[in-house]
Image 1: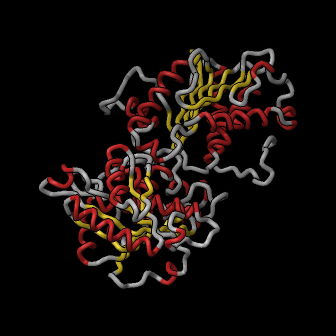
Image 2: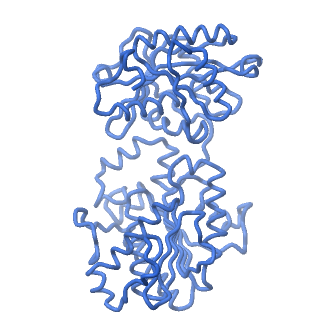
Image 3: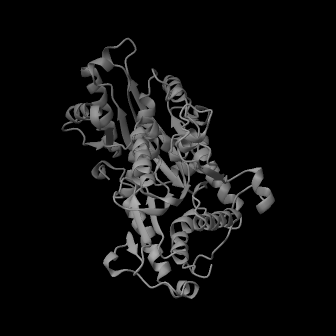
Length: 479
């Protein structure tokens, strides 16, 4: 509190913050006694974990022990460097010197934001991204603060494996015989680092490893009856966030997202990812709600194409589906509008004719066209671009993550009933079947791919057109 450096944001202490500080103090006392401590703290986002664990915590430890080597890891070098700069500013402050007057200053030979050593002593800090250069370094205290940047990283098996290997090989191998390990994270996935630690410490799990270090876990949920005794509320931090904030956070997320990010209880995602029951269906010719019509809508046309021989010739061929999509961004939530759906199963020649006819109609309305152009989908983009040569410009969409990851962005809108689709009865049946069963293997997902592509591209068009009059005329079709 004495060294708090955010005058515009008063320090508010919750019981979870106090517990994290208390556990760090206990861990240091054990360290002085020659005993190691390994802790996992699970907390929701924006609840002050980084201030304690990655800013003031390391500064406090250095003040306690000028010879303590601290290693701080996070998902990327940029974030780690930010932590390093914050630690240095705290230690260099007048308030810090009033608490630790014996601090001699920094060694000028380590004048870098991510690496500082105490002048004339062995202690200091090194801040690294996961996979960074920990080799050759030692550590008495290892702190990991959020090893995933976003949902794409957390959902990628390759990234999860890479983060785990970095944790075990790059960080745990650097620890001194007596050490402190503090993992403070918002959870994203059942198979994240915390999940793997739990499995290796669990005698009943197939991944149990009797030789793996034992960790103690302290878990705080954003909402739960256990909070009432400490806060007088079922919410974790009402001193900082009103009930409306928590309700908005839960309301704007799917159960899958809220369970992991807010409750710290991720689960394995199955089928029925998108709530088709929450779709607001409008018949052809029926108007969108008045509040939607009053918005500055920037429509895009998104296509998911069946273009290969395999897709067209199999017993149950894929669909070519195109739809106009717009996104209204309101109070942190996304409202998705889908209109003018075109869906068919045709051979290449007739397929191209249908697409050309749709493009001519879109041109009059100034609706730009997007299609995925990553990897194997590049052929579909090339096919569409060539078919529309001289008719319309086709923009490539380069998505990040697989189909499920991309659908995760629209999942909260489906869960909250913020999806409006205008179409005829036949298209309604087709979309309902595909959306309801996604991401079950073996089912068609053409409609979902069209909607997710349209969502991301409409968001991008909103970004590019921010502050401008909507360019819904053929003369300004690109923006």
